[in-house]
Amino acid sequence: MDKAETLAWLRRIAGDLATATIKRLEDTLPWYAEMPPARRSAVGLVAQAGITSFIQWYDDPASTPWIAADIFAAAPRELLRSVSLTQTLQLIRVTVEITEERVTGKGEQLREAILLYSREVAFAAADVYARAAEARGLWDARLEALVVDSILTGEADEELPSRIAALGWHGHGEVAVLVGTTPHQFDIDQVRRTARKLGVDVLIGVHGSRLVLVIGRSEPPARTGEEIIDLPFTDIAKQLEPGFGPGHLVLGPTVPALVDASQSARAALAGFAVSQAWRSAPRPVEADDLLPERALAGDPLAKQTLVEKVYRPLKDHSPDLVATLWSYLDNGRSLEATARELFVHPNTVRYRLKRVSEVIGWDATGPREALILQTALILGAVGADGVRRRPPANRRLR
Image 1 (cartoon, rainbow, N blue to C red):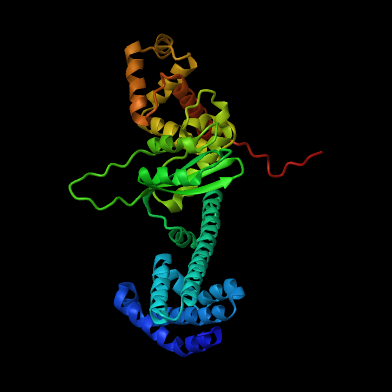
Image 2 (cartoon, rainbow, N blue to C red; image 1 turned 45 degrees about the vertical axis):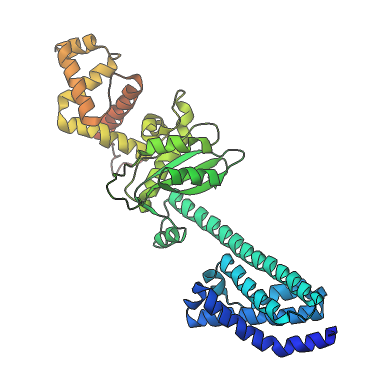
C-alpha cells in the first residue's frame, strides 16, 4: 500500500486499536484493573489520543514534538498524581505492542515509524513527569522556607501544622533548633541523608550566611523485641556538624513539640549572635552555655533563664547556699577565704558547694560555670532587691 492507502486503513482501525489496547491493559496490568472507573476512563482517553496522534504524525512527521505532547494534554491533572512514570511507560508499551501486532505485514516502513513515534512519546512522558516533579520540588522548597521563617520569627498560626504535614514531616515529640554558618557549597541532600540515618526529620532554612536546621525525632519503625534508643540532640548536632560552614554552631534547648520550636530557635539565634565572645566555645555549643554572653547582650530570655534556673532554686532551697556561693565567687573561688568570711569550716564550704551543684546542675568550682552562676546571682539580686523610685506625682519643674 502507498502512504494514502495506509493512512486510510489506519483511520479505519483506530477504534479497534483503542478497544484492543484497553482489553490488553485490563488483562496484563493489575494496577489498571484496580483503578476507579473515572481514572480508567482517563487512561483510555490517553491511549486513544496516542493512537490518533500517531496517525496524524504519520501523515506529517514534522509535527512530532507537538503531537507527542498533546497526548498527555488529554490527561486530567489528578491522573498525573495517581499514575507513576513507570505505569505510564507500561501503558505506552502495551499500546505500541497492540499497534505492531495489527500492522504486521504492512511493510517495514510503517513498523519503523511506530518505533520512532513510540520513542518520541516515551521522551514526552518523561518530560511531563520531570516538569511536575520540578514544580513540586520548588513548591516544597518555598513551603519549607516559609515554615522555617515562621518558626524563627515566632509568628506561628493555625496553618502551621497543616503546612508541616504537607512537607511530609514525620517528627514526633521533642524538637531542637541548630544554627550555624552556610557553607560555600551547601549539599542539602547530604544533610537529609545524614538526618535519616540518625532517625530524625529536619526542616532546612538558609538565611543568607546563616543555616538553620529544625530537628525532630522521627517515628521509630515498628520492631519487636528491640529497644529503640533516641540519641541526645547534642550527639545529633555533632553528626550534622560537617554540613555547616566554618564558625560557631549553636544548639537551642529541647522543646516538647514542633509548635514550640520558636522557643528553641530564639535561644539558638541569640546564642549564635554572641558566640564569638566565648573564645574556646566547643562546636557545637548549647545555647544555655552562652547564657552570660546573651544576658550581657540584653537577651531577656537569657536573663529570665538564669534567674529561674539558678537564683530562685538556690534561694528557695536555702539562703545559706546563696550566701556561700556569693562569698566563694567574690573570694576568687578560694575555700579558705570563703570559710573565714562565713566563720565555718572549709569542709562545710565544700559540702554547700556540692549541694549547689546538686540543686541547679552547675558546678561553681569550674571557671566557665562560675561565670554563669555569678551572672545569675547578679541578675537575681538586681531583680529581687532593686527598687525603682517613682517621682512625686505633683512635683513641678522650675
